[in-house]
Length: 349
Image (cartoon, rainbow, N blue to C red):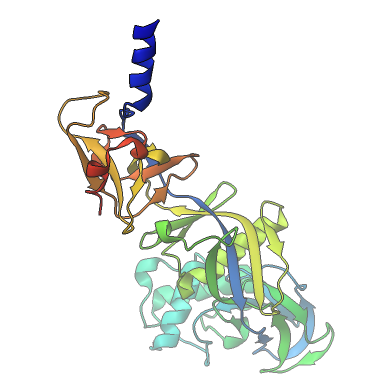
């Protein structure tokens, strides 16, 4: 009995030797639940450049695509012209300028003009494209001259229409407002869904907004002006079918949406360890303790060295785990940093 008691007494005061575990490997895109916060600009008016009787208009709330019919004047369609600037003159063969370039880009987007024919000069290919538009979409005489009355200018960010301004059956002249646009986003911001810390794991990388089965590319945490309309349109479409939610907002010009995920466009391979393996020193340094050499799974304090971590990152989607540099994958680290002797843990700074 006495030898057994003595062994237990010795065991009770002996230091707990650390257990080693291998650093695992995970592929992650750092997908994070986010809110989309859109700052909306004021609505604008859609003006006609045609004169006559207003014979039809599109309804409020309807989405607008490039080249879509917005209204008719004397039964002739007037099409959406979304661009940086409106057209200001009728255009004929031989004309040159930025407005010709804008028109040719428009015709190319509608599938009427080959992309290699887009420049700033109204040539025969442009004439043919205008004739095709006149015959197939407008129902007017195909003479190859593009008249500004064929289109109504929309700012690039506009995605849907507001209320009609002029009633059907009224007389309109060039410059008269016919429709209002719905407010368009002037900026979009991504925020953590639960008002947590900043989205640091997503900073400085190309991103995708995950909405349902769609992956919408985003250049970064601050979307560019060119990305705003597409992002807003996608988010509102997801709200309409119930896969995202619009949140109440105390600010009339701000709209907030939830039920969305933001992720890196390219997944990254990271090492992963138990969260208990991370030691935080008094000075704020963060380390794991790695066994040098081939002493895998040995319970010993010999051959341990502190490996500094740039920052503590909780492993996304894994409870009680932390990410470490990929170069540590396969290395043996101490499972519980608290079991490391004081002289070894003191080397973590």
